[in-house]
Image (cartoon, rainbow, N blue to C red; front, side, top):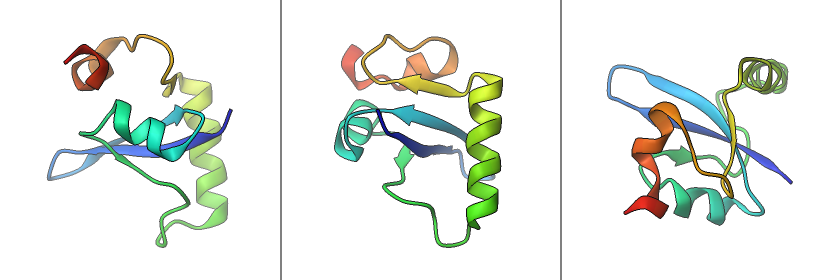
Amino acid sequence: MPSFLAVYDYGTGGVWLLLEAPTHSDAQNRFPDLKVFGSRPEWMSPEAEAEYRSRYVRCGFNWNVAEVPTGWLAGFDAGRR
């Protein structure tokens, strides 16, 4: 399943993560308060993207949208509304 870079932008910074979903739309619809990227942001180099993706998986900042989110992400779950 593809994974999409996503960010919760809180104004003075952001929390980045990966959302695993069948499509970009599925990820964005499940977490509408997050900005989900369909492709690498223009400012991000391919090397930085690879490092971010590796780090997020290694640190557990990746979620499958078919599962019930835990922790801080649970507060953004459109499926709970």
